Length: 258
Image (cartoon, rainbow, N blue to C red; front, side):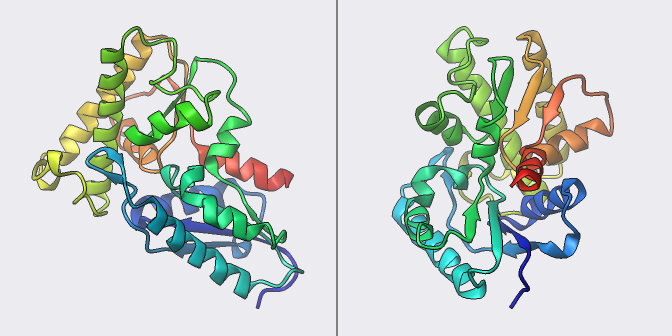
């Protein structure tokens, strides 16, 4: 049992990107490292064939069991902040059961990356890119967050679709590099498992940057935990001129102000 102090829990459905999220949070948080903990959780795939999974209720139940375990581990004298190292998993439809459950346990506070982004985004020039289904979902639940789906910098539906498809492919390619599960992306198999994956990842990330620069996008919010890795890989070979905003840094600020 932990002593009375602020404890931060990072819930990670994917080991590779989840641990990157955790390390970025450690590096940017004002809390000492022993107060920030990494929890790998087993959750069904959120994106299947580039669409939102149909197993919404099952994932709700999986997350609910995780939060029940946390409640059993911390007394009300503990202040616990929980964040999720997956932006798609942070959508309200996945968290409905958990949010209802947590109303009875105010000492455990769920802070999602989407909430942190919503607090700072203000113009169409701040573009949020993430998984394809997340981009469509945000248009309904957080319409003030500009994605390729609702941003006025894109002129046609064809252009919007091409952008979300490009971002989704980059995410799958990072997952493959990190040896995360990519079996729900059959349209890219077996290309993701080939030796050319890293080369294609760099090419696609560079292509994304070029297209965004052409559209006058200045600030890019990396709305998937795999995307910071994609840009770190590209930055080893070329200079990146866009302002890249990692939601982990926004989470760190929210924790400091909490």
